[in-house]
Amino acid sequence: MELLLKNHAEPGERSVVESRIRNQHGLHPRLACEFVRCANRFQSKLTIKLAGRKFSARNVSDLLQANLAEGTSFTIVAEGPDAKLAAAALDTFLRHLAILEDPAGPEHRLRSFRRDDGLLD
Image 1 (cartoon, rainbow, N blue to C red):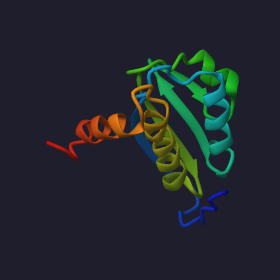
Image 2: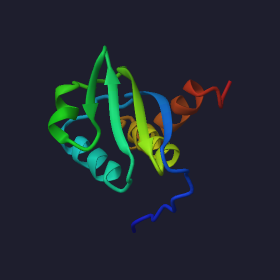
Image 3: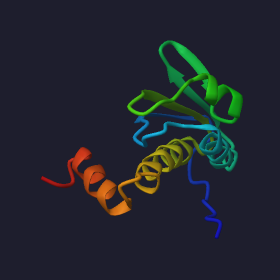
């Protein structure tokens, strides 16, 4: 089932989100393809900034060159008419990977995910 997202942002908007890779195997080729698929749903220019370098969020090769391993922190920059929505969607995509790909099972990872975000004591 495909989720259609409406564009509620102003033209020329800019959004910056600090994100982190939380899943054990990082952003490997299959997930990089899914990430690009998510990015391509938006009109905004989408960039990953890491260690002074910029990588296109719409290019699988760029994402793989970024070597986004578990624990890597980086910045998602979105510029365009749907920037806030795009940046939030990509960050949410990465957060959900941590839950879905944990070998201990989604319930175990969900508990630690909430703890990391301050949702649990």
